[in-house]
Length: 117
Image (cartoon, rainbow, N blue to C red; front, side, top):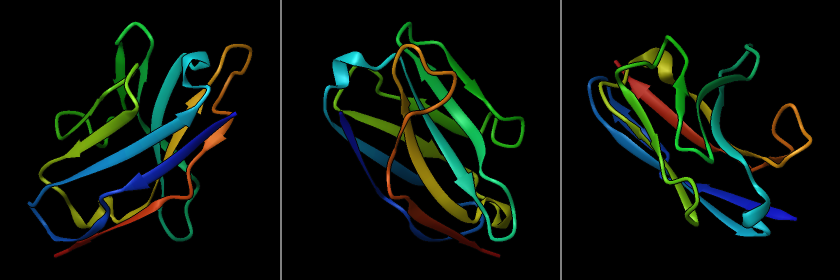
């Protein structure tokens, strides 16, 4: 089992920055990918950034060039968010995947990010 706890969310003005952290505990050696998802009110949860055990990262077009994921194979995975926009306002979730699963099989509880204009 793996436990994920997010932190670092908050209220920030447009153009500002935040760094989200995901603290992983338990059988983290079993994981092969970590990711960050977000869900805005009335919208579906979407993948915004992911990193695999080889260190390869991918990003949603909406955050490419502004967000950076880091920290796989460590107890903490981070999402550095720069040049934040009001449309980045959402609940952000850390997720993890172990072999044999197409998508995440572990989720954190989420941390709220609110960007004011």
